[in-house]
Image 1 (spheres, one colour):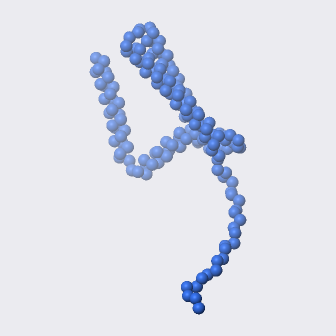
Image 2: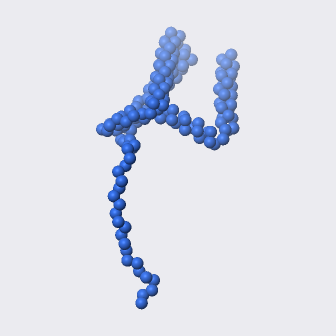
Image 3: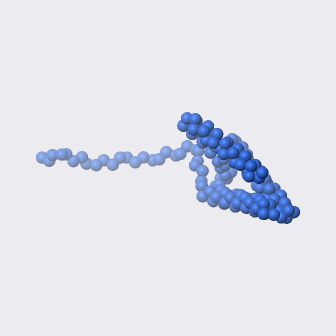
Length: 158
């Protein structure tokens, strides 16, 4: 019974994966590139200020994408925490190999996600300390030096 349910779940997961892969192959390279760029733009959250420098503005679309990404990370964290707590309570209430295994997997997933969030925050802090935004103001013209005139040597000497 359990193996049958597990087989059905795997068929659904692998079927959706195969369907997604086939849909990706039918698109042309321009639309695939545009899709990848839009994905990067949605997930690229620029810092709101630079350490030691003046704050710079984030475009409103980028700010909204950052808020959505932050909310999504929070929802995933709360979901994993809930799953970990519920499976630990279940493992304590009805100890067994299956419940203890589920609790272990849920706690490991929660711990791994927290580690990834901490690493991401460390990278963002490091980026804020090191990266300086390029000024959008018009650069000052560079003073040009007069070209150096070198004597022209003739090919033949008289």
